[in-house]
Amino acid sequence: MAKELKDLTKRADDYSQWYNELVVKADLAEQSPVRGCMVIKPYGYAIWEKMQQTLDKMFKETGVQNAYFPLLIPKSFLCREAEHVEGFAKECAVVTHYRLKNDPEGKGVIVDPDAKLEEELIIRPTSETIIWGTYKNWIHSYRDLPLLINQWANVMRWEMRTRMFLRTAEFLWQEGHCAHATAEESEARTVEMINLYARFAEKYMAMPVIKGVKSANERFAGALNTYTIEAMMQDGKALQAGTSHNLGQNFAKAFDVTFVNKDNKPELVWANSWGVSTRLMGALIMTHSDDNGLVLPPHLAPIQVVIVPIYKNNEQRDQITAHIEPILTKLKEMGISVKYDDADNRRPGFKFADYELKGVPVRLAIGARDIENGTVEIMRRDTLEKSEVPLEGIEMRVRDLLEEIQENIFRKALAHRESMTRTVDTYDEFKAEIEKGGFILAHWDGTEETEQKIKEETKATIRCIPLDGDTTPGKCMVTGKPSMQRVIFARNY
Image (tube, rainbow, N blue to C red):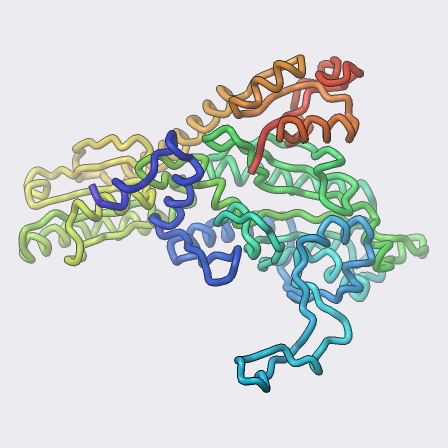
């Protein structure tokens, strides 16, 4: 086995260290010279591209169109919605000057004090303000609605504690911003997008999620309501995987975005926004991967199948290649991404270890003797099981195995979540159970004071009020006051 795998920390020994090492050793990303920022490497970006392409198609099927808005936002724009600016003020990076000059004392380059901007600019932490400033010019009549816009972009939030993919100062994401004529239409779109995210997470990422509503303390700054999908990682911590926000008319009021309705009367528009980010990469890693490296769901794997020839000389290699080429063609025609690795610069054992580390779902190994016998060795990454199977019909076997792996890793993740989800009725019981990790279902009286007390004393937050949760009334575990349903608590990333 390759040295990379021998050196990979075990999850049971240090889960955080295992994650950090795996991101680097699997060639997903590395730290950049800029504090808190990362370089996403080609293999990591290929996974993100598959996520992006899949989501983009799903968005467009609902009528969404893509656009692009400026990276820099006038500070006055950010200040127009009070709750919004308060929520992001501590994370903003600010541009104050537009030029450098040589230091007259010969100490390098300095900011030119004569090049100060008349108005400071914010590097976008999110784009509601610049987009709604633009929508004022786009929306005039009910005929302009609904306006369904998404942008793929980068954002910057000056995080103090960073971890690649999970929390970085700069990250990639998509943000949808929709304008509607009625509150009902806007709410329907808000719910539609959180359901879309849940389908993507479960069908493509093989990651089970719980859909719910955020508490007032946890909702997006400036939103009336925030819907979320919450996932559980292998260490029992929660990860917010996607959100959709009902913004009401707050941003329309702030930027005076009105339309003339069918009765020829002016009205403020209704808004929602929704987004996911490269944090999904972190979720993908931590949901499925093991002590041998990545385990990628076939629906998102850049390489779904790798074929490694085993040969002693060029004549054997050419013989194997001649047998493999028709199989490669058929697999590609079936829409399966396949790589034939006949490079001489690495031994087969190293190749096996490398593709295992990178989570390639299916590996085929074939040598001269296999050609004679009409067989091939097949290995599935999720269980590491190997078997010798007939070479004839291998394409259909591979196709079926990819779907089997996709379903298996989802079932495994779901079983893990269910085993780590518990119900408690008292605060003492809660304090003991939260130390074990996982999701805790408990009654809460609905007040911000109680929520804050729990967070301060246990470091656990309300992940969501489940949309399909237990609605049996009860009493708050902390105050004993009435509670309409159980909510989900967890420690989180």
